[in-house]
Structures are given as structure tokens and as C-alpha cells.
Image (cartoon, rainbow, N blue to C red; front, side):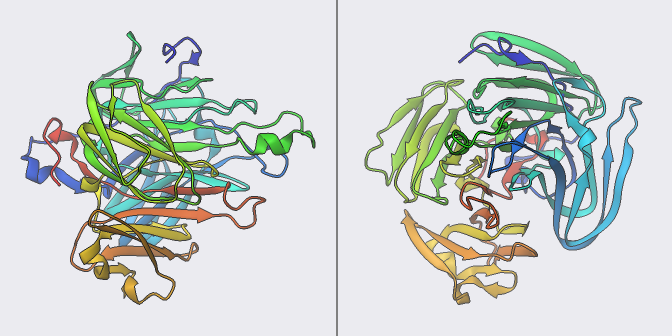
Length: 449
């Protein structure tokens, strides 16, 4: 892994913090719904799928809620005061466009943080939109941010110009926040004020960088697919087959755990990466015949390609993070750990839901208010351990609530394909819309579940 700043341009990110009394481990878990969020977008470049040339970029927020409430969206500024962008009401969902002037370039910025406040609990998705695709991520509430992260991303696209890998940090505390980036024995530090952002942009994959701070921060990673500077009929098809973008809010180390079930997505092949939080972490793969037990070490991720369209179980001796990137689509996402499953999700904009639930509790899954078991389009397959994977179509133009009548936690992956594109698999997304996570004041306490 290259040193952090050998090929990187520095960029500024902002961090947000809240105060709270220390709680017991039992009280520390909450769903990733919340009433206060921060997000920032790095400048990334995408292309048209039919010819590879530069495509316009737009950014937006999707708010989903099961209750009627008021949502305000503000932006940080160089004056230290926030500026109002939107003041709206939400019931079910609302989509809020964000001006592209808030896209961050490398460096430190005072005015690139978007702050979302709500009178009721909401789920928040931030996304980039291109003419042929969307690149979304679920956003954690500020109450669940952390001080320690392992950065996870994808490799930039070497076939197009202006493809870059980005790490963006947002400071959230009222006091000064010192952020340390450690990469292969080399460390560098940045000091940020509340809602300042720090962004660095690289031409190479910087997965595995350790990010620590004295106050809670938000960390977002992104990769732009880039574009063809001069369209060529003879080479664009080859380049088209190597394009990808990703955008993800990274999970703090406090949210990592030891048991994951990986679901097949779109096609037979996915690239998995495993990030260990500590050295000498033993990882076992179950339900995959050709994978053996391995050791994974801090800062050195393990990567493998799963070629079979079957679900698999991953168990480790110490906490890990797992990311999944379907090989033929434009997406990468964090895999939910079993302990991060929720019992209710509000979603919007997806066309398919893939659910993993305890086999003896599968009949309790509801799509809106209707038992999923009564849905004629329900597909059930891939039994893993005592879990069953269910799949059903969604109406991408309306909001849905997917829940369990008995409040049993289950995993959820939502997908969308864009049928108007030239390749409905490649211009698709998949991600988990929510996580059961730690409150930030519970840092250091074990995850229950």
C-alpha cells in the first residue's frame, strides 16, 4: 500500500459531535434512524454509458420516514453560521436536490458540509446522480459517529481520465478536532473546526488507511468512474466494461463485529474485501468450498472474488468490516453484520429488496402492511445456517416500509436497475439502507447482538 500523501491531494472535511453521558452496553444500541445528520460530497466525475464521454453530475438527499415531521437542511459557511437550504415537511419520503456548488475539491473547506435536522426520526440517503445511474449511501446520524475508522473504497478506474479515490472527513464537535491519517507507518495530521471538511483525492486505492481523531467525525469515501476525453468507437466498449463509481459513509470501528452473511447480488461474481480492526484476526468462510480459513491484519485488507451465486457466512475471531462489489455493476457497499440487522426499514427509490431473516421467522416479514409471504412475486432461496434469503420487487416510484411483525431483526439489501440504460446490470446500485449501531458516547463498549 502506497504512503498516504505520495500521490494524493489534500482536501478538507468537516466533523460533527454531540455530548452525552456514558451509558451501559445494553442502552448503547440504536437504529441508524435519527434527527441530526451531516454529509458532504467530493467532486467525482462520471460518464455516459453509451459513449464514455463526460456526463453531468447532480447530488441530492432522500429522506424517508414513517411519521409526519419537519425537516430542515442547512449548509456550513465561512462565517461559522449555517445557511438555510430547505425547510420542508416529510411524510413517507421527500427528495431534496443540493446545488453542485457544495461539491468539495481537495483541501480544507468551511462551506461544504450539509446539515440535516428533523423533528421526527428519519432515514437519510445521500446520492450522486448521473444520466444513466445513481450512486447512493445510507447516512448515519451524528449520535452514531466515531473517532476511529478504517477507510474502505474501490480502485479508481485506470481506463478513463479523472477517476479518483477520495476520503472526506467532517468535524462535528464544538471544540477543535485533530484528525490523524496513518498509512504504512506514515502519519499526518489535520486540525478542523466544527463543520469544516478535509478531503484528499488520490489516483490510487487508499483502502486500509487508519483514521483517528480526538472528537467524533464523519468519514465518506468515494470513487468516480471518470470519463473518456475523446470518444472512440473502437475502444469505448472495452473501457465501458471497466467503469465504476462508489460512495459510502464509512462505519466507525465501534460498529464492527464478527458475524456476516453475504448475499448474492445481480450476477454470479462479487469481490469481497475484509478489513481487520486488529492484527492476527482469523476469518472463516462457510458454505464456500474453495475458501479456507485465513489470517487478516490491520491496514492490510484481504480481497477475494466469489464466483458462485450462493450465500455465504463469514465468522471471525475479532471484529471486521466486510465490503461487497458485484463485478458487473457500478456499486460497492458495506455488508450488514448480523448484529446490525434492524426490525424496520423505510426505503425509497429501489426496485428490489433482498431480505435475510431467521428461517422460522420468515413469515413475519411485512412489505408495507402486507405479509410478504402472501406476495405472489416472492422468491425464497439460499438457506444459510438458520437464515433464509427472500427477494421481492418494489415500486421504485414510491416509499416502502419493510418490517417484522414480531420486531425480529433482519438484514436488508435494496437494489435498483435502470432499464433505460444501455446495460441494465452495470448501471445499477445496491446498498443496505440501515444499520443497528452504537451511540458515540458508548465508544469502547461491546456490541450486543
